Length: 127
Image (tube, rainbow, N blue to C red; front, side):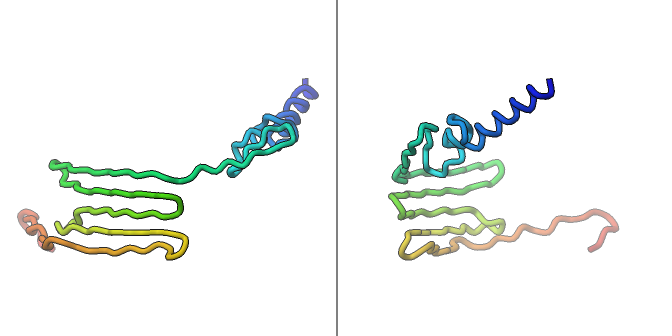
């Protein structure tokens, strides 16, 4: 029985290491963009990155208000996001990223800071 367990463990290790085709590595799970078929050839896979998305929350109950928009076309990314700060002002960030200029962001604030009124702590408690 022990020898059967050793043989099964050795086969599993060989499959994971890619020695025997169709294992975890040979199936491309750890391939990092290279799909290996276990038959002596590999195929490079590269998908051109292109997308656009929008996201937003407007929760009147919790006061959570934020938005985000981003567009990517190849190695060029442009986007912005905004959120309501705890003081009530709105922070907006416009950003760009590409392989020539790197990541750049411009941050702005709008609105006026409004700090909440102090809360009464009760009788005899002073801070």
